[in-house]
Image 1 (cartoon, rainbow, N blue to C red):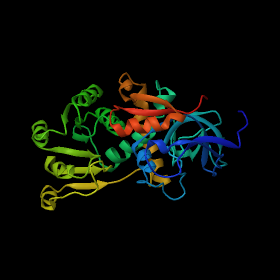
Image 2: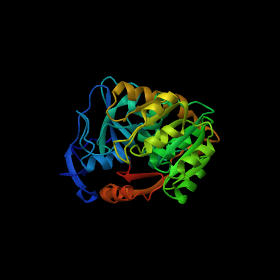
Image 3: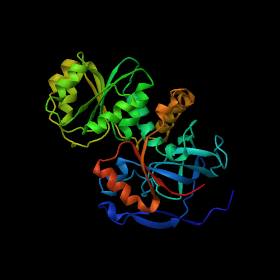
Image 4: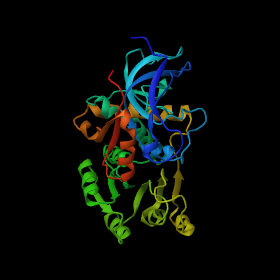
Length: 337
């Protein structure tokens, strides 16, 4: 391994604002704790929480880097004294607590995963944040089971498309809502069974026609005025998992309907969860999902990359994400390892 530099390049912003506030800067190379690794980043995934943090709406939790970026792929270049699962030179993809938009990033060894079979480094950078989110919230928290019916709001984005592909690996009937027919067609190509335009006035009627007994679980990234529709669309003892607030943080809820149907409603975000909680998600992915990449159907799990930008053009990536015109994931090319 070559010697590590004392300073490294990363994306920074001095104050919250639009994509134009993002620029390149430099800092001292971060130090690692005994159970952490240092990764030389090859690619970094771009996600909604990055946009929210840039806008000043999603501050990093205590102790986390204030540099954007929650998922990367790259090479392990330094090991904490207690790390035994990885060796210098290992290629990994990893969930990181922040700092992914940089040439180097620190994360816990337990939050790293090997590059799956048949997946490029660019594609691997698009896996951790979305797969950790979907596995942790849809399967572990939401208890999604084979044979159930799942409704996903916003099926064409990074989280939504990962939810479609993972759910179909477990024989789940998947319904999605999107904002255009093009995005619905994209989700159908991923394996979704039916799709609906969330602008349609008869959206609830369309969902009920597809699932007469109600849906078993809703993965909700909309919230706001969509909560009432979710409660009406759910089956008796259905589950609602809210993970984003794209249509607002407040909802007018018919509590009597929630009670009558015995609906279980939970919400969570990934970033503030404990190291141990994220380790449990990583272990679940390694045991339940990573082997599926090597199967004949494994290509369905490979994330679709809509666009790739150089690190210095992070502002363009953020502008595209905010436009809502993408289908699948956006990544930043950081360095060549």
